Length: 71
Image 1 (cartoon, rainbow, N blue to C red):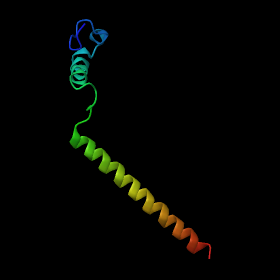
Image 2: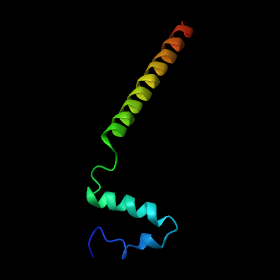
Image 3: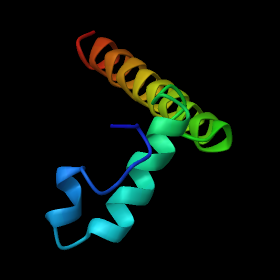
Image 4: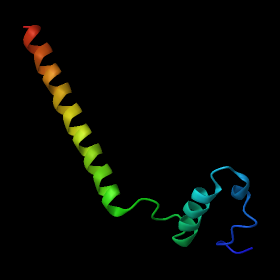
C-alpha cells in the first residue's frame, strides 16, 4: 500500500472524504513536517509575541498600581 493511494484509506468512508484525502495526501507528500505554511507560522509567532508582551505590560502596570495603592 503506497502512501498516496486513497482506495485503501479508511478516511474515504467519511462524508468529507474529498477534502480530507487531499489534506492527508499533502501531509504524506511532506511527511507532516511542514503542516503550516511559513507565512502563517510567522503570523502565529507574531501573535504569540504580541500577546505575551501585552500581558507582561498589563501585569507590570497592575503591580505598579498595587504598589502605589499600598503606600
